[in-house]
Image (cartoon, rainbow, N blue to C red; front, top):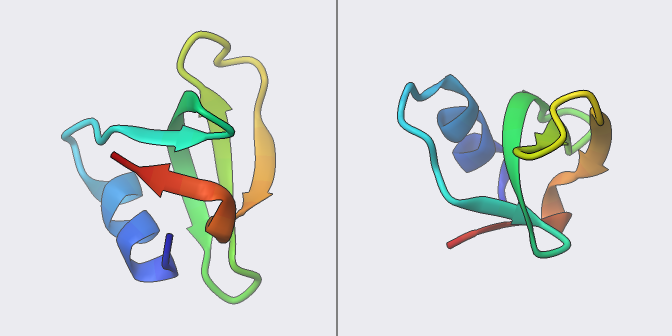
Length: 59
């Protein structure tokens, strides 16, 4: 996923269907400079992690 699209999804009030390793996730914020996103799985909000943007897929 590119940084601009990830930023759009993170800023949108509408939930997008995005996965990380096949797991539905929520994007909290995006660091376009480092090409990473702060995410958490929808079923595990306490499990925050920083992942590379290329590992996110929009469905």
